[in-house]
Length: 255
Ligand code: SF4
Image (cartoon, rainbow, N blue to C red; front, side, top):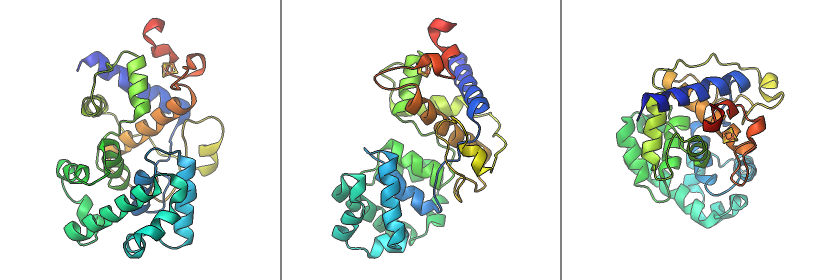
């Protein structure tokens, strides 16, 4: 990995943050809600996940105990709006069984594990791939792990930073190394300002988004949110809206 790649990723971060500011990820009231959201968002839009989380909250089941005591078929019906609902119900039950068996039902104990060891344990769970494991580690556990998603890959590929052959962990390590000495931004807690104007993939500040976390975890948190903002609005799969994108000046042909 070259210094030029690192410089480019750092420049994207500073440019996007200057344009859009804090993204206030993850929009959740508890760490367990982040975990449930990380499972539910697999292969579906976040708007569907929000609806499902609302159903679970209304039924007072958006807790470890709630998922534990709800029979799987009933849970599947409650999360129907997120798609693949039987599969996702089974996966949520598997996670809680793992948490109970390995950590006595305690997220504090679970997230107290060293990052690499917990990552391996999460990846061994049925239905947990790299992106889900890293979302849980970063957004629920405040572990300094960079979440690579399809947007990250697409943007870095289109800017010739990574090749199409690069695997998940290569891109993750590249981003982690590039941002490893970046200072965290000053966090704005102004919810109205957060939602005014085009601001990437900004959410309203939440209990989870405003919680204290290590500096590096905060940088990775913001960078992933900023990248989602680029991917959702400008760097679409079928079309690149480069003329409006804050990263246009970094395109290889623009240099
Ligand atoms: S839309 Fe264009 S400028 Fe923006 S990230 Fe994608 S390729 Fe780069």
